[in-house]
Image (cartoon, rainbow, N blue to C red; front, top):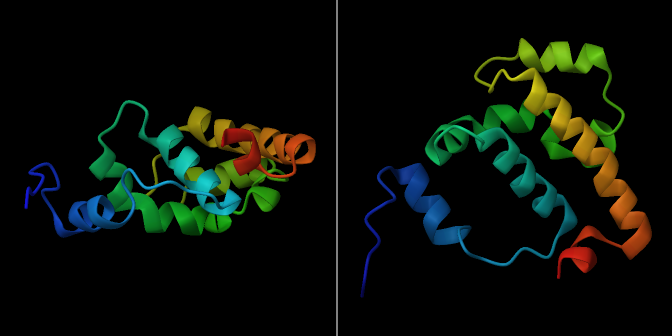
Length: 116
């Protein structure tokens, strides 16, 4: 059996074994994965994985319906949250993406219908 060498921590190994490269057909999970990619831009994936739980807390479990309604106060709250990626542009992009995500759902029945 071939074992990949790039998962260098238990967290990375768990991600590799249970998530990486696996199809996702659930809108909520799809949104989280895509928004973690937003946060990853310019950073290593392990950095994002190490902050994932704190990002989930800061972004209400990546509930796109809640995030779509975020205001400037929420941006400020997230910017001040512990152990998150403090990029106002990325935070605002996630809010914008949540709004667009809902529009895609409206047009296609679900985001996964659109993607797949």
